Length: 309
Image (cartoon, rainbow, N blue to C red; front, side, top):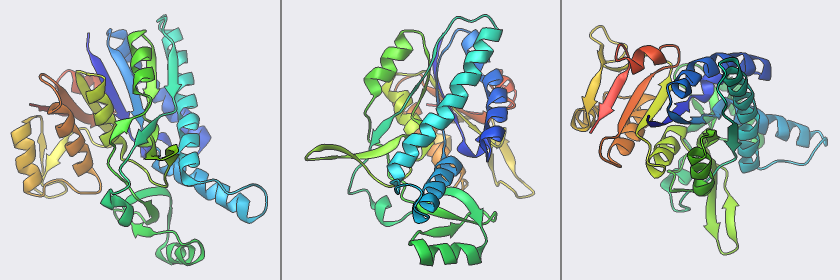
């Protein structure tokens, strides 16, 4: 039996509540296989599209005198509850269907960041909907947001993405795991907070969920970190005629490919670095990158990229 942290991408959760719930039911079917095999499982997830939509909706309502403006950290907490609710419900239903007696719990998670992190001066994390370049520049002028082009798909708002330093609710998460609960934690990378003279305070940012998942996995002494993304494998020379999938890599192999610039900074590189950090955090720890649809095949070694020390 292993302790496993599984990180789901926010972009894989749909663009509406209806679509998200439908997709999450499929996600639950795949993930419960790990529970049925006897593993202790913690699930984290992204929230880029969801937190952006919540923030945009709240701001629109505030501008039309329908509600008070909501700060970005509060929108992040809302997204944790919204996504966690759908995951909890779908996982609970799948557990019941398989006759597995286990509770599911979501923890609204705060993650400490450093106020001196240079990321606060250079927003890079895409959130929310895609816009045309003209609309993006118009919203920038009207609201003071920062936009950037996102992988040829359109323009999106970008916010700071500081590195996670500590997980505030770590003990509660650990207690739930040890009491045999299926835990959802660190949603959206966690609500970013800083320590002030009066205590913790939320800051407007989005922490990369893979980096937070790596930190969480290391802190709960997990055996494996699984990052689920849009592709079955990690590739070198990705998108080129000579692209090659990678199966099993040592940390040294990974670092060599990073130094060669093989992984795109806005997509695969953070996942690779998160895996590298987790593998280095303790003896015998491994990380796996693959797609949700082929998770079973990846666990059997048929697809996916396994990173070892």
